[in-house]
Amino acid sequence: MRPKAVKSGGTGRWRVYMSKLVSFVIPCYRSAKTIGGVLEEIDAAMGNLDEYRYEIILVNDCSPDDTFEVIREICAGRKDVTGVNLARNFGQHAALMAGFHYVRGDYVICLDDDGQTPASQAGRLLRELDNGYDAVYAKYGHKQHSVFRNFGSRVNDWMARVMLGKPKDLYLSSYFAVKRFIVEEMLRYTNPYPYVIGLVLRATRNIVNVEVDHREREVGTSGYTIGKLFALWFNGFTAFSIKPLRAATFIGALSAGAGFLYGIYTIIKKLVNPNVVIGFSSLMSAIVFFGGIVMLMLGIIGEYIGRIYISMNNSPQYVVRECIDERE
Image (cartoon, rainbow, N blue to C red; front, side, top):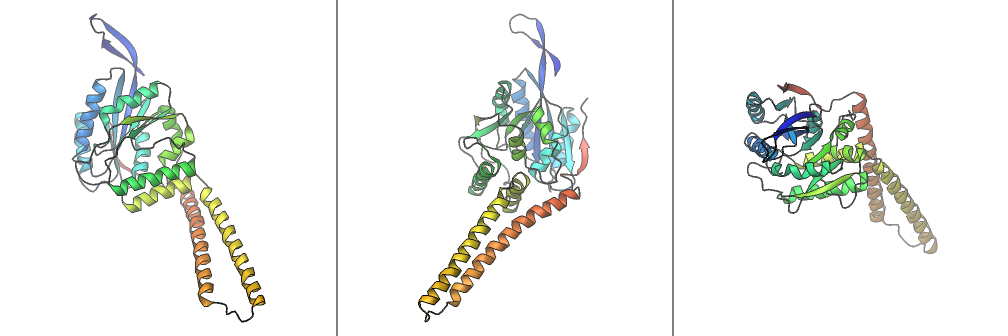
């Protein structure tokens, strides 16, 4: 923290105190038309919070539009903004991890680039960090996302609760604030499949929710496709939990037991009534069912093995093509 001089109201005197530095990390994708408004909102919000200084890290996740050119122009006029340009699209969580390597703040706030997450209410998150919490997640009374995105969020919440032990009453979102030591702990994770929610939950359970508004998207559509959502879920499944493997073992044992019992039933039925014709349809149904179970379990195991192989090859979380950092 650095000292900051502020004029006391009514006395005309200046007082000096240690102000905390807040780092905003914003992954950017197709946000050439919105990122300027997000920064204006951050400036307005932080201008009313004299006890904090702030910096902004903008991470362009290889957006196909001119997002990084807009970021370059912003950085040219401001020394408190850092622009990071990734070499290809690595996903939102990898972009966050890239931004974390450039933060200098005591507190770190992550939010979206489309203006749906209200930067004007950042003070609410910072207040809870000052109150002693390690992490603060924004909670929306009514999300202005599509049905598809809301479904994805519910699945993500269920997965975090079952696989990662997330408290049931904790709401997770892309708008959150953490203390510096949480970021440093997250940076220890160097594997190519980062999952920020899992990293936060692995570091602390001292987390609280804060009610904030959620706006409708003014420009464009969400960058999350069904493929990206599945990739995100697989990160959570395989990177921070072995429960899928345990589930595979349980289902395999259950299926084997069911098959064994069905075989005994078939034998007894034939012995009791020799005229009973063993049905081809039931046999094929059993083969298809158990074959599908086996393939599913092999797929889960293969996913783990494949990720282990890629991690052993030191595949990067992200690759930075260019960084604009004029901070002193």
